[in-house]
Amino acid sequence: MAIRTVNQIELKGKRVFIRVDFNVPQNEKGEVTDDTRIVQSLPTIRSVMEAGGKTILASHLGRPKGKRDPKFSLAPVAERLSKLLGKRVALAIDCIGEEVQKQIAGMKEGEVLLLENLRFHPEEEKNDETFSKALASLCDVYVNDAFGTAHRAHASTEGMTRYVKTVAAGFLMMKEIESLEKALASPQKPYVAILGGAKVSDKIGVIENLLDKVTTVLVGGGMAYTFLRAKGFDVGKSLVEEDQISFSLGLLERGKGKVKFLLPSDHIAAERMDAQAKKQIVKNEKIPPDWVCLDIGPETVKLFSEEIMSAKTIVWNGPMGVFEMEPFSQGTFAIAQAVAKSSAFSIVGGGDSVAAVNKAGVADKISHISTGGGASLEFLEGKKLPGIEALRRG
Image 1: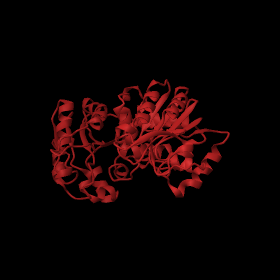
Image 2 (image 1 turned 45 degrees about the vertical axis):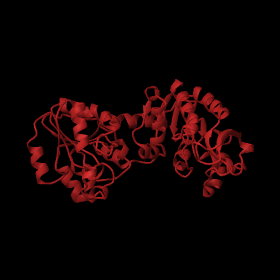
Image 3 (image 1 turned 180 degrees about the vertical axis):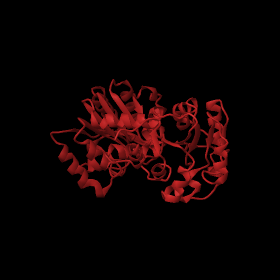
C-alpha cells in the first residue's frame, strides 16, 4: 500500500502529532552542539504550521531508562528549535497526561508544542498499548518523520498508529524511503557497494541482500581482515572475527563469476592502535606478525577509486579504517572524495560514514545521506521496518 505524505492531508485546525528524531548531542552545559537532525525536520514542521495545523512534536533523547531525568530533558532542543523557526516552541511538562491535554486544547493554529522526552516512560520502548492509546488521544493526525527510529516497534513509532485514523510520512521519511528503495528496487549499473567498519557480523544481512544486485563489493575497515584471513593471509594483530571466517570464504565463493569482490591489497599498519605509533605501508603478503592494520593503503585507494568512478549507483556503509585518528584517516577521506566526484546516485549511511563525508567537506556532493544508521542497514538488508509498515495502514 502506498504511503501518504503530510502534504496530501487537510491539516487546518487539526492536532498533528509529528514523531521527530531530536536525539541530538549536547555539551556539559546542556547546549545543543549539532542541530543537523533538528534542521532536517524543519520542512515537515513548517508545512504543518503553514497549513494551519497545531503541531505537536515528540522525540526521545538519550537513554534515561524509563525515568524522569533532567539531564535528558528536551528543553535545550525547544530553545534551539524556537531560534530556527523564528517562533516560540513551548515545552510540555510531560508527553501524556491531563496537563499535556490542557496545553494542547489551548493551542492556536500554527503553534508548536514539543512534548517532553518519550523515554521518561518505560512504556514507550515496550510499545505498551495503554501508553500508545494515551499518545494517540493527543492528536487527529499522526506523521512520522523520524527514519532513524523506524526499525524500532515503539509506542510512538508503531503502537499509537493503530489508534489514530489518519497517518502519514513526513518529507524526510519519504526521502529516506525513496532513496533506499531506488538502491534496492531499480539501481542503475554498474552498482558499487562500499562496506567498511569493524565487523563482518554487522554487515552479513546487507551483503547477502545486495549480492544479487551489485556489480562490485569493495571491502575495507576492520571487516576486511576476516576476509583476508579466510583467503589465507596472515594479518598480524588486525581485527579478525574467527567465527565469521568460513562465512566470509563462502561469500567469496558465492560471488565468483557474478560479483567483483575487491579486498585491500595494501594497508597502513602500525605497531599498535596509537596515533604516535611507528607505522608503515605494507602489502597483504608482508603484514608484520605483531602489527595491526588500521587503514587501507594508497594502492587500494587507487583501485577502489577507479571502481567508484565507473559506478552509476553507490551505497557506502562503514569507514575504511580508524579514521578518528589522523594518521589512519586518509583512506576513508580519499573514498569520500571519490564518491563525491562520481556522477553516480550515491547513498551514505551509518554514523561513521556520515561523519567521514562531513569531515571531508563533501556532504553536499552526496545524493543522499541517510539519517538512520541502524534503520538504513536493516532497510538494505531487506527487512520490513515497523515504523514504515505502520504508515502503510493509511
